[in-house]
View (cartoon, protein in one colour):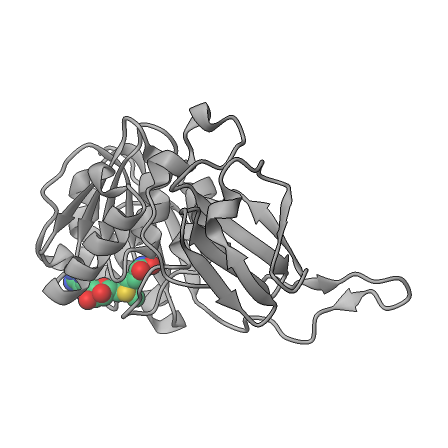
Length: 272
Ligand SMILES: C[S@@+](CC[C@H](N)C(=O)[O-])C[C@H]1O[C@@H](n2cnc3c(N)ncnc32)[C@H](O)[C@@H]1O
C-alpha cells in the first residue's frame, strides 16, 4: 500500500453521502493481498501490475462501486478505514499491531472524552488509534524521549488529521507525568515498571493502567511494581489471531500467522 497524505476529517465527513469527491481518499481493492491507498484527483494516474487507473475517474463514484484499469481489470472503490490510513504511516520503531490495539481499547474502556497518557510515542501508530477513539472531546498526552521519533509521529498524525487531539511531549515518562486525574495510562516502552509510581499519581481513582511488553521478564517486573503501589485487578494477556482460508472443501487455518508481538498487562488504581 502506498504512503500518502490524507486528512481523516474528510475521510469521515458525513456530508460526502457515500460519493467520492475531488481529493477524497480511496482504497482501491483488488483482493486481500493487493490494495492501493490513493486520492481521487483529476489528472493523476496510478500505475499497477493490473494496468493504469485514472484517479480523476473516481470522482463522483460511490464507495462500493468499481473502476476498471486500461486493461479492463476491476478495482473496488472502498472508503479507507482508520487502520488502512495508519498502515500507510512511515515507521522507524516497532509498532503495535491491530490485534493488541483492539483489546487495549476495550479493556481500558477508551472512548470519546477519555483522557489518556501514553509512553512512548514511537512512530505514533497507537497514538493515532487512541486519538481517533477519544475524539472529539478527549485528549492523548504522549511522551517520547527521542526527538526524531516525536517528529515522525507528528508528521504521521498530521497526515490523517489527528494531531489536534494529541499533545506530544519530548519527555522521559519514567521521570514523571505532568497530568493528573487521567482515565488511562498506556505504556509501550522497555522499562514500564519505572513509570508505575508516576502512573499511580496520574490516574484517577479506578483509572486503568496498561502496559504492552514483548518479554515476560518485563511483565513480571511491572506486575510486581503494580502490586507494590496498591493497584488491583492486575492481569496479563497475550492475543493470538489466526486467519482462516475459507473455500469449499478446503477450509482450514492459514499456514502463516503472527507468532509473537507481546503481552498486555492491565491494572486498576484504587484510592487509599
Ligand atoms: C516500541 S516503541 C513504541 C511504538 C508505538 N507504540 C507505536 O505503535 O508506534 C517504544 C518507544 O518508547 C520510547 N521510550 C523508551 N523509553 C522511554 C521513556 N522512558 N519515556 C518516553 N519514551 C520512551 C522509545 O524511544 C520508542 O520510541
